[in-house]
Image (cartoon, rainbow, N blue to C red; front, side, top):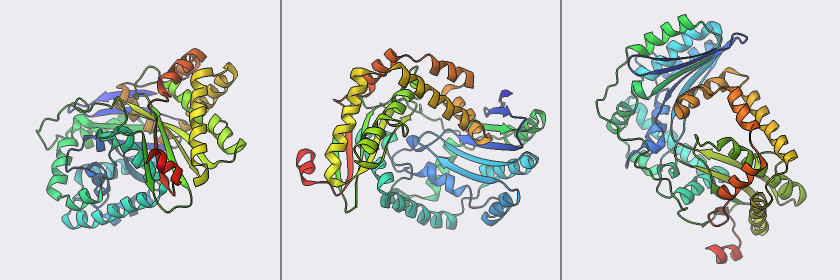
Length: 422
């Protein structure tokens, strides 16, 4: 059973009762992420997420950790380009205590000066960890190549320089500006009582008023999604065992009418072990151990990215094969049998992902954030079932345009490739 409530102060509350389960997932989402950071604010959204766990007026950091363990649950948070989420998952009998803990973190975190300086070092280590992981670092480089100066192309963690220069005053000012009732979504999924839970939500969030009267500019009005990539080929030489490469194509905004067809295109191309890229590049040719594609969608645009890691001598062959499979999608489309198999795969993944309370809670928040309404499972299944071979062929022409794909590579890149694209 689904219910949406708008509190008087603007907080959106989205609830789904799942009476057959014994757990509850609670989330508090701030509709702010790295794309809303201005010059000199890079990484602040993510840093606030870290600081929320460093102690409140009522609990020390150690008490927070001990309390969630004592409840037998899990608590965590994450930052994306467009939102920041804090969540907890517990047994249904512990929902009151868990909500009290989550609300305390969200409203009363101290942001102590010493804690900020210490956490800067933690985030700097996190940035170094990304730079030491070829796959993660490559995706960061690729986003810059595709999007240029668009804020989605910036790293969520910020930079080493922005972390070192960040001040407590700037951090708190940013938080006050963005952490406001109208920018907050509370989502709950699991076994709970509607009246009892709504009373708790009103207690913790109903009287909350934002600390800042500063008006926010339009969130995406000033961000123009690039019509062309900032560069076509970007090669980064590093002494690794493999060449890691991304080939990027066009994507779609998260609310686009063809979004489910785009999921089908991605799944057929490289979305699983039966995908064309996996079968051709790994199974038939043995050119790579890891090969996959994924679709990233945002409020105003998207990217379809193919990732592979291969021997330096096979770098060109892998790129050529990726382009050949993309051309086949445009030229030949998809047979009905393959399309039906992919639809079944998508629907199965969707349903399995929504069997638990965390998956449901996550979906509730994203529906509200991006659609402003609840999108039912039946609605999604019907949309997937309506997809036709002609729709896939036309969309493939639109997304897999060979004139606009972007290649980013990291590792021991062969001389012939640096001569060709360097």
